[in-house]
Image 1 (cartoon, rainbow, N blue to C red):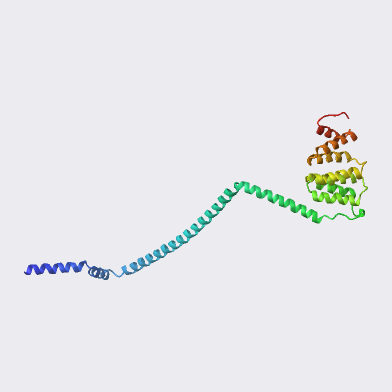
Image 2 (tube, one colour):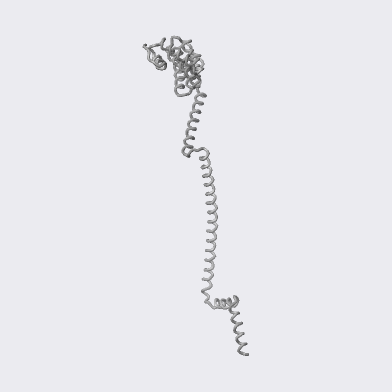
Length: 256
């Protein structure tokens, strides 16, 4: 009987030792028995652990912010890529072709703006005393050569208005026809070429005007009128360079 009671008491004591409170009590006792120099070291260690925990928390925050920024950047890049691919798929062009088209458009815009500025800044003299006939004609011829047909037409017509009997008047009248011909307005060009011979029958531009008149008829589908104009040119100005071209148009060589 006494043996059984002793064993039960021993078991109860063992269970008390396995509880946290039972384990903590001896630890407190041991710490209390440690020399006094160990307490500051434990405090310092605890402070170091707190500092390390703060650094870790800061790094976690920074990593979270960096992740958000990176995710947004990836999303924007993906959107731009999708837009580019969609544009290329729609237009059927490459990025380089798009840049080339933009360059050509910018060049055209610069050219148009240059012409507009020249048209706005240019002041055509209103009387013979304010300008020179040759200078006015040369400006019109330069505009025609460089494709500024509206300016060339304006210059030639102003020349004819101010200098109707000048030496270059037949050239200016021919230049008016050239402005229309260059723009494929063949009916208007034909009317202006007719005026070269009608107003300046002795001018040196008559053969050229007849040749271009025949070409206008040809472009307009008037084959009979075109052949008649070529034949008239060959008959009246057989030694001119335009007559030789007319013979080739007529399909054969004729004696001069």
